[in-house]
Length: 438
Image (cartoon, rainbow, N blue to C red; front, side, top):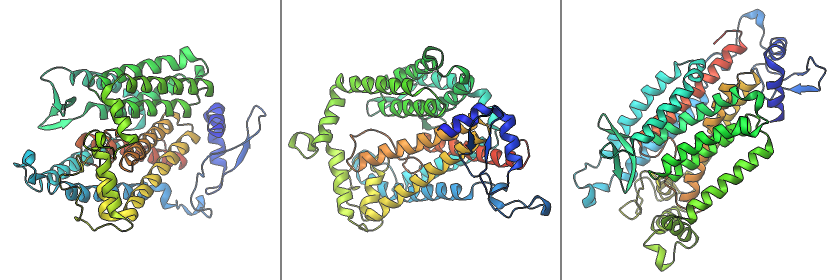
């Protein structure tokens, strides 16, 4: 954090002079023009140490897209598609879904993946300067959609929650758009408030008010899980943007108190906490602890190597929402500990790589781009952590899907768009290192 902040303070000129004077593949220390201590860039800016300008060649890693990031994303999407089919194939046997074909959710998920992929390709074509320019307007638009979903006969009610809008015959969840919009708005806000980030009322309070408005709209749906993710995204960007540590911990304390009060003042949220603490009791096993207890049974049945693809018993109407919130439990039952660790490993690598791309952009004085990428990393990493914790019984039940894998068109759409923006950030950083203006 200290290296990133020092690079930001020293400005474009000194940093770029250092970049063009360095050899690819090495990280050089330099001394600021004001006589300050030497600074080490937080990323390695090159690939092949033997690269020479004279031969006109450039390492492949500097020329194109991040192939590893793309393939890890594709792997998660493909594995998710297979598991959504496996988890939902028996649902038509339930009278509630009697009119559905066995491939109903598979085909819809494939359509959603196609739409999301097209949207991601379009998003990749948009320069970061454009995203920065439209960030405030996108935030306002997301607020409008959150308000629209609360209007009777406009918002769609499912399981007692008003969270969806009907768009072209498909349900769209405005809270997913809000995550992306808040992410961009927070990154743009920190760039604009860089000079006053040490002052609470001028730097932090307006951003806190914006997140509070989003939170009130989400709680009205209700969707506390999405509010929690958005709050963590905003806090993470404020911290990475260089907000004073005392202010950061003050904000964290306020959020902890706020979420504690939300739980304490809500009977059904309190019941979820009590069910989490004792899911096997007679009172909770058939109530609020039902999903958690059957998730744990599924994972326990999988043992080390699982019962095999398609062999899950818990998905046969025992485990509710097996194809959405509790997809990891089905993975644990059919592929065992090996399958669960594989998914965890892929998400860890994905999050780490996205954060690295963000750090690299900040090292090039592209602060908005860097904070945006790191915000995406926080979003995907934190939501995956919460979903996995719920499935494994480490956290109370919370309605959050597993990014890139669970059934849900809105989530898949915004996940792929955000990753496309990260790939664009990485490409523009590589172009800048080659002396090409993005």
